[in-house]
Length: 165
Image (cartoon, rainbow, N blue to C red; front, top):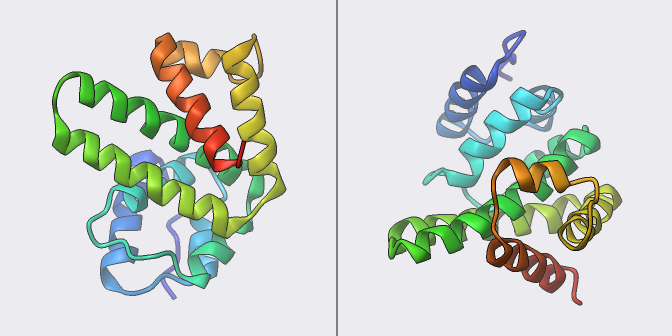
């Protein structure tokens, strides 16, 4: 087992995740250590969701992600929203390669959401949809990324489709 370095910042979490994924299948405890902080979790997700070497998530990865539901839920919801909005952004610019990459991130995020199966993720997905329609808990997030109405509607549709609505 690889020991997660103390005080991971975002950049070092990316590097550590790359090392974990390239050397072997990470253990649940390695993933749990990594996602116990927001920077560590952000580093894991940005690497895992965009990696060419990432395979279908193992039981170990899913178990590790479940160990910190608050951080993991928040980032899964934001990653689903961001990848959806970015896919539309890239299509507008006629950059199908980047749109495809955003679509891959979106699909991997959807898979992780299904596999970790945390009630908190589903609650936060509903809060994201509510924030698109009104001034909800994700209003600041949506505003910070300057998503336009079409992007927000695409996020809403993606989440509602995922939730089976």
